[in-house]
Length: 531
Image (cartoon, rainbow, N blue to C red; front, top):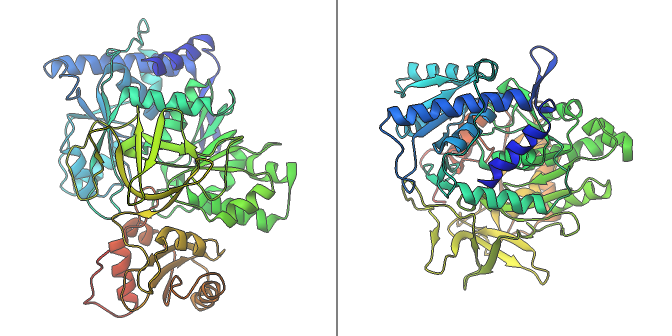
């Protein structure tokens, strides 16, 4: 598999350069892991996994996938070593986020043969067990120990043809998570397409601020970075990551300067936090870049997951802080379209990558065809995407394609849009507009009520709810039409518990839970959310 061969080649060419660096808040220090020791650990773990597959009765058929291995780890060198070893062994990786509830973990663990864990993963497994969750055998992974006991290094892929390499689970914002089967060669084609869009060395120093259990972070943080010979910088402990209960973009922001990244993939919340920092500091040029990134030039910033208000991106661009938005979904192995240097348009998700074709269906649905499409689901659901007889993936997203080939996502085909006042505006667009307000951390709009549009707004913990409500109402009256702005405004303060219960590990809102919270705040208990 050429992706793995590219990564191994870098390690053999520069064995003593730094492959992974961990910023450890607890010890106030950095720990560096060299290519030589990590690849030695990968080799040792690859051998162990091959032995385990033989013990389990020999490798399964490629079409069905090999041994299914749950990966329960923090963002750690152990995660990277385990991920690469799993690819080399032909086993199927099933990432299980540390932030999963006991109920979520139970559903995921029921479908794996064994688990690989680091220290935080072992602790989480014990916590789930205390809640009655049964788990298969767990195997501890320690890079230092594996590196020391490695014999002659063997990093030969067991399978060179295509195979099922991962099962990732969707966020489950409107329904139960479903397993998406990811193909090894599909991931390799995507990584190749991404690398062709940027200069070599762009990913020389990549900072990961979200869990590696997210497929897009595996693609950019591990595969693009390491196949470019770069260093992956990780934050420790796990509570520092966006997606950990109670962790905000504002809390993570200072670590960007300490890490000195050359590249990052940001969730929208971090883009908005950077914008607020820029407005507050008043700095520009090298002084701003040093304050933000600890370097004299800006980092390369990608963004995916949800739209960012064009006004935010424009303000950042005026400071030469370019944010390259993209679009994708697990069914396309993550990214499918991307704004890139020399070909970017604010307010869009960019053009299709080289290996991707796009078109619009008769109803405006975005259709994709590429070599990175998935191999099906573990189980189908109401939000499942279909691939038609001509190989087009029906994404379920509504879009527009402009004269330059840039894609703008306008909403979800099967999700509610704003219809209460006769408008057909996208909920995501209205939410992004409200989130451009400094006081608003999150905005969730419910626009399918026949009588009025409802908005739940999460504000900073120390904010005055009354003043925030007035600012939100004034903003809506000035920037949105009557058919788009929230007429019923509920403001709640940010708390770790609120984020834990009402948002996914990727920070996306669980709309049913937030609707219930809104109804409680309004003193209504009998109404249900229909969309």
